[in-house]
Image (cartoon, rainbow, N blue to C red; front, side):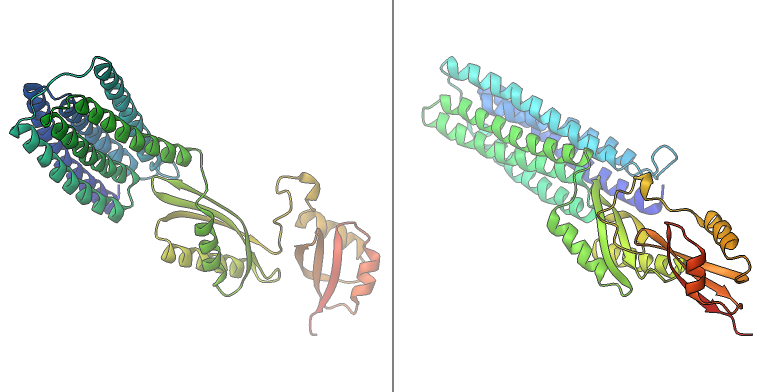
Length: 372
């Protein structure tokens, strides 16, 4: 594990542990005061804080695994363990929301019951709102700094707790003025808020696990950045996906068909460097250098394959025996054929060589004559 990964993991652990301590204190306070006062909504809110404590443990564990370096079994790294952790976090929240929802409906059907909305109930609820809002901003700051979707999900979890505590406060005010059923209604609001954030987390993490592409405007911005590199003619077959908040990018880069392999590769390296500079969330870039636009061609079709060098050289040397002595030849696989640049000292023209070699795969022949 690199120093950066160790540093990220340490930050995530520290932030989460601080939040967990607050969750534990809030959970004990809300459940205790809710039990004494008889406030169903306050007890429900306390259970929500208790679920936060459990998910805090999940965040620390998932962060530790996701920051591990790539290995033989996970060559792209372990970032999707963070996505899996987010998926589990969403599922846990949805189950908690379902339990609170069923209990609240049952209480409403029973007509509600009187509870005592004392000063301690109000105090612990206000304390929950203030502290959970602080935890949200604290956690979200580091989530954005580290580009951690899991930490961001945990921050929103805290924000949900803050909003649900506001709903509880409204319920306590209603109870204070003689409307005990408002307490159960407030618990329903708590359940709805938890369910909303849970569904959002589940949808986002599922989209990542099934390799959903980045938004079109982001892909177009990446395309424009790539095309700003001199020597790049076009770009196609752009494929994007995310892994734990990081982007993986595949693309085909079209360059001048007659540049050397090394020059074409260098153009690709410049494209990759410029993209990483403009989009720091990119973790891995795989580029394929193309001599022409093959965006509409089937990359897997064997019918489009042309013979390789050893077959071409054997065939042309046989066809051109007696016409010229071949020093070397350059092959250009373009437009479905093979164009050949022949380097020779023999006094022969391209038309004679073209006429002597009748192959369906042979394109234009050029003679590059060595000086004597």
